[in-house]
Length: 461
Image (tube, rainbow, N blue to C red; front, side, top):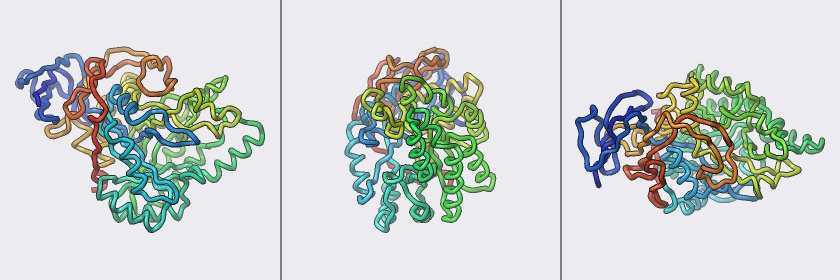
């Protein structure tokens, strides 16, 4: 392996900002030193640029079956888009189908991903069917480096778990060190509201947001927190969208409970205004939890600043408008739920730095370091330090770009952020020392990315 030196940039991690040269050797960070001290076979000039850790997106759904169709990004196209956006590790969700084992679901996802990924990947396990066999399998998966399990309080008949099943899985994770990730929405109540809305002839995409009420997200968040407390287990609530749910998390954390929360760029930058776009365009923005009225955004940003929310992931789950989102014309409940975003996260969060919502170090903390710690990948991932994987992004903080379907690399026929002007752009990306994007040209390949086993949540040790 050649020695590569990244010279002259501002190195930003969750804890430090320092002008330093970064030496990459054998796929790892070999050293950081004052500019001009180190030499290498190849030197890259990063003067005027940021040198940051590759992003860790802890919530993606490549090739996910949903609503009679599949997410439009494969592991190949989705991880390539991730690389373009400065994300060098994804953690995707393997799915247990009802009546089948966890192992069967995990093996199916390994088969989809292996040899196809441009960047490194791990798996969470969606637990849809809690029984004695499932609980035993949870222990085995933790030993294999699949250390987090997702449950759903939503989607009755598909992924839904009742409170008893949730409690059992939480009790198991309290023993085996796993982390329960919760989709917190009261799906039973929501189904009633869906049925009533459709009976009234309220079929447009905007009603998706109106029936999935913020109070039902908050209620489920509260219930999940108390069930976890009873089980003596930690809890990670995914895609928090409502200020009332943030308040539940803040209260639990103030009580000293091991409770964590994630939000996503769509909740920080988009709103119910998008869901209400005419001519069925609002279908592009149908996801669950849903987009909220704009006033929720300030509380989400506040939660990120106060650390009541710790992580920003994408919940990347793209469906094309043509032929997929259109399945729900005349019935919003049939619109596949999900948005594309794996390529946009790092840039949107840098825009948040420019706009004054968060600091540069907090940007790296919520997008790189904390997700790596939360899911047992730190310091291999999520930082720039000797011994860490050389997942490094050279980022131009001054370049301007317009986000558009015309220029993105995700395998989907629209952009959720179409026409949005942002400041900052990924220039060069290394994954384990290999350049996968080089000065805005893709130089990676399918199969470079490898499965990365994880230790347990590092906030609990």
